[in-house]
Each structure stands twice: as structure tokens, then as C-alpha cells.
Image (cartoon, rainbow, N blue to C red; front, side):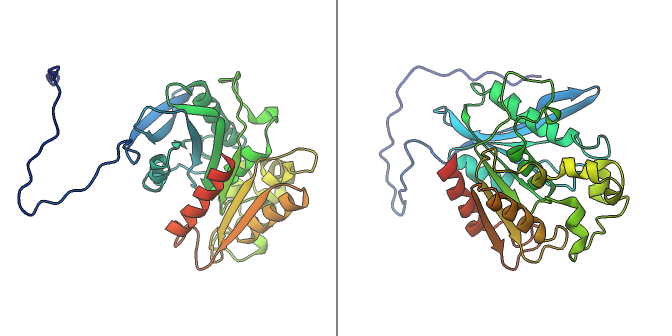
Length: 301
């Protein structure tokens, strides 16, 4: 049984003048700038019986267009917990961003480059539906953590590489204005050179599952998946913000050093922060860290 539709009367309701003893007053924001809405499980692509979803958090006031922040949740390229970062990401919607958390095909159902193809497809879908979601298609940033940081970095360095694009929404660009990489892998063959709780060279490691075989036995496939492969002086890249905990037990801190040095050597715009005392996401998502992200996005998006 459907709920009855409420009937509204055409009348002006004046401000209430009652003031009981002990009552206090606080003033509301005329623009209601802090309110946002949540749009869950929006399908952006279909592969046979596999539906890929986006979760959107956006300002509730219809006064866009707003810049778009595409978020890629880390998962070791395995099945994602797509809703994990929504509480933190909502704060960016409060500050005037449309935030979209993107699902991709995980490595148990498709090997690389399916994952980057999906993220880029999601960006193009959002641009194609810019009016619907109050998006400014000229102001798009991508942000991810761990494997999501890896894919976000790949988005930033690989614009124009046809093998990373799908045949959906081809009239749109998958390019971005800025990249935020939280502790993402960047050169998979170098990961075992530093202390880690994971044997990254093992045949069943997340990195090996991603490329479809033990990474040390497939260097060419690994090179295609490494963001640093696509960095050069010949092509201007979007600005990068890299942040990594100094006690990361899963992705060695050196992975971010490699990306930072490659970008800097190529003359690209990059900012790098070591987060003291932080692990692989633990003690990381603090107000100070999120404020650094916010200032970076404000400057470039």
C-alpha cells in the first residue's frame, strides 16, 4: 500500500513569536549550506549480469553546478566495501562538491586493465549526466586510497591511452584536473624490497591477482599497470597530492616516494606528505589530513 500524498495549502506561514522562559535562539543559515543528500547504488555500466554502481553525496541546494570529486575505495583490487568512506566524504559535499564513490570490477572477476577502464567509464558517465547531478564537467578531481590510490594515479597519468577506455559514453572525457593519492601502489615489482605484512611477489598476492599471474614472472603486464610507466616531461599532468603513513604495514612508504620522485623529475606539479604515526589507513583520516586535501582541491579544482 502506497503512502497517501500530503496536500499542501497555498498560504504564508509567519515566523513564530513565542518565547518561553529558558528557551535559547540559534540562527539558521539562509543558504542551508551544510545540507546534502545521498543517492545510493546508481548503475553506470552493465557487463552481462554484472552491474557496476556509483554512490553519490551532493549538496541538497540546487544551485550548482559543483565540482566533482570521484572517489575510488581501496580493497586490494578485491571486492570493495563501496560505502566505507561515505561518512568522511560527506564532509566534502557539505563544502560544495558532488562526491561519487565508484565501484569497479574486482580482480577475481576480471584482470587489469578492467579496473581502470571502469573508473574512467564512471567519470565519463558522470560527465554525461552532469545536469542531472549538478556537476561542472570542467572541474573534476579523482581521489583514492590504497588500490584506489593506484587507480586514481593511473587516471591522472594515462589520459589518451586507448586501452584504458571503454566503449561507453565515448563522447565524454575521462580526464581530471587534480589527483589525490592516499598510500597507493605505484611500482608493483618494487613492493617486496621493503618490509610488509604481504608477500607481494606471491602468486596469490593482490598484485599478482590483478595482473593474472605472479608479478615477477610478468614484468610487461606489470609495467602496464604501474602509474610511473606513464610519467614523462612530454605531457603535462594534473597536479598530484600524495599522502602516506610512515608505518604502513601493507603498501610500503617507498611506493609513494617512487611516484613523487618520478613526477618531480618530469617537472610535474606534485605535493607529498608523510603522515607520522599512521598505518595503512589507521590514524590517517584526521581533520588535519582532510583539511590538506580540501585546500589542495580548492586550489586546483
